[in-house]
Amino acid sequence: MPPIYAGLTRRQAALGLLATAAAPAWAQEWTPSQPITILVGFAPGGSADQIARQLSYAAKGVIPVPVVAVNKPGAAGAIAAQQAADAKPDGYTLFVGGGSETTSVGNFKSLPYDPRKSFTPIIKISRAPSILAVRTDSRFKDMKALLAEAKQAPDKVSYGSTGEGGIFHATALVLQKQTGVQLLHIPFKGAAEAMNSLLAGQVDCSFGAYEELKGMIDAGRIRPLALFSRSRLPGLPNVPTMTDLGVPIVLDNMKGLMGPAGMPAPVVRYLHDHFHRAMQTASWREYAAKSGLTEDYADGPAFQKEIVDAYDLIGKAIAK
Image 1 (cartoon, rainbow, N blue to C red):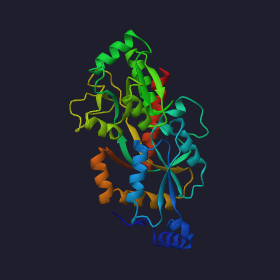
Image 2: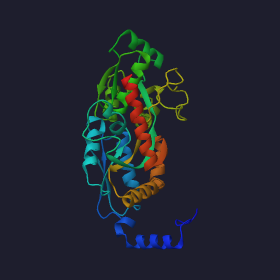
Image 3: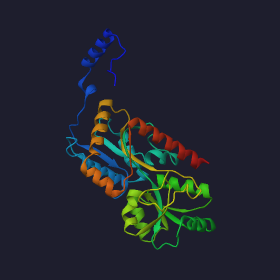
Image 4: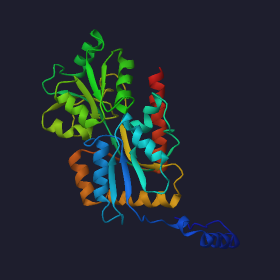
């Protein structure tokens, strides 16, 4: 890699070094001096909650201050997102974003923040393949049977999601538009509530992320019918994607760390580098392996592009 000042004259290089030396200390480096809060926009038990808590634990010994996960559920993650957007851009208030609160909710209703401009993406952690699942004893043996009944009896087949305007609600609406069916939406505050409702027989099926459902799938309590992802999962080789079924819908639920807009570059750099290091620890590696987390690292700018692309895709699909 060439030196920073390659191609400059000696005088230009000298002036650059003098400017750097004269810059304030905070412009060169930053180290946290108080606890860092990671806001979670959903109830305990879902993928966003698990990621925040496991990452907080993995950060011990990597970041010299406590990292604390705090649940602020509601409005498909928008409550936590708004609180993060309104926080000081000092690096001490972050949230788990990239999903509903930044890619879909704004397409359904007006928000007090701009999903594409009000945040500083720091690091992308994962993409969660979306799954439509039923109870093991469900009358629906496959996706074809579910869609057939939904087409014959509009609003009879009910589904649970993590909230009105959320990524799974958006996925269901795209499914309805592409297949001509009409499902009955039952929104919940988080994935755990939606799954409990499914197990209790209160809804016919439910959308969720793979890592949220893996334990119940492995235990034989629920049965996945289809993946709304770009490829099949190694852990579920017999579960088709919607593309396999002739209905190409790809809407993975992204997760990563974000902060308020306007965060200084040294703060963003520190948080990115240290949380990335936390993701290499033994505790995080064990969690990722056991949970079925589909890791999908990207830095802040790349994460930002994916968020904007997903937001625009959902908006166009819903508007059709």
